[in-house]
Image (cartoon, rainbow, N blue to C red; front, side, top):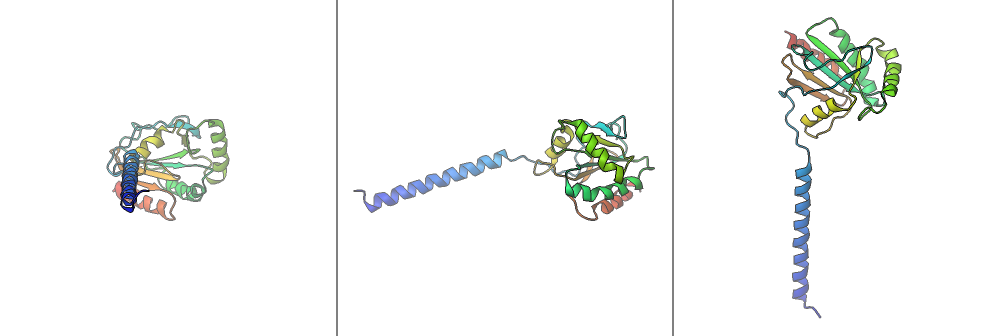
Length: 195
């Protein structure tokens, strides 16, 4: 029959082993967590957009050179996106005649675009009532979103997400999610950058 000293020693060893296992697991989780870099000041990453609605060509990083750019990622399936989109349309209209500003609408399905025809159909149906002539693009392999997500602290991109870059191609701000008034603040920020 084991003594109480042996039982206490075994329990102590078991608890130490369990603690080390827990610590090891936490270290592995920490090592596997994507590391984001501070977004502001980073170069706008490479992107791969394609025309979807109301355009035959898509913007490239090179075509945005020398312009303040707003890239807005949204989806017709996303309730916060649909709430914010009319405000985004107002922002786009405000700067539609300003050659130093490029407003880029990117309709997304939430991942790689396996069915571009469905995405196009859903996007056109939504835009008819909100912004029937707005050029809208898609991110077919989700490369653009992946490149931006890599810069974000969590390593993922949510919807809606709006990226503002300056005329030198540096990211100034990323708005993740919907907050009432975000587009008005973004408009003021763009206006101050134009001065």
